[in-house]
Image 1 (cartoon, one colour):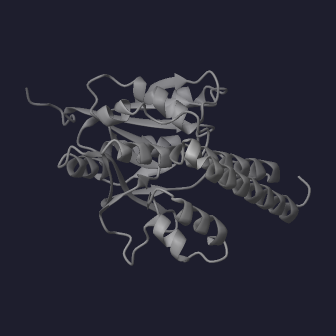
Image 2 (cartoon, helix red, strand yellow):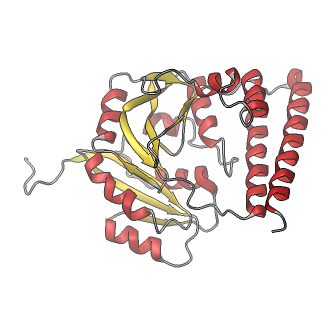
Image 3 (cartoon, helix red, strand yellow):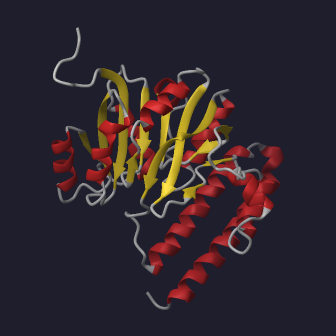
Length: 300
């Protein structure tokens, strides 16, 4: 039966986002969804900070499913809850930060490319910053060499070869390519593949849950694809605070997640000495950076 009244056809698309005090940016994200796809999407908002009720009201106005988390599950854990709440017939799921605005036709483009190869389990758009610069959202899975080199030199030598290799930098960031992992700020996943590997590893509270997802998909023989003809804009870390203590905690959390990922990647008794060395190095780096932040900001 043909649709009447200009309504979009019912599709098999889900859109999920995680809110943590995201009331100021959610409306713009939700408003950008209809123009991003010719399909009618089922949208789910997982709220990690359900205190004021304002996110629930925003969800109701937008016709989205609202899920109040009983505690802060982090990005990966709340995303898993949101995906699980989608109807079973959903085939494609866009997972996005709430401070993203989707470009016109961006979801349609991602689905069109991913549908050409059933091995593509995750596909990400070009992610632009508000100033028009492009964020390196498609990166290699970190190895010991690239990970250590990137960590040691990125702040003092941004174009060092290890960081370039990690970010898969090229002379033209607008090149479609297969990649190790895609930024969790905005990516489309094939529902069956996402469910097959159990979604995000909820052991990551912040950081590296997207690295881990791409790595595990690759281990299963799936492809992570970067498609820059689909475009989105990311406004930044609205849900974080600029306090010195919070910044130090975020540094610690980042290094904690890095240790978890490297321990998973380099597992087994033979690599135990390597894990000890990596853990020690990351602990030292985390402490140095945290102390630097505290000293630069004075007393909190």
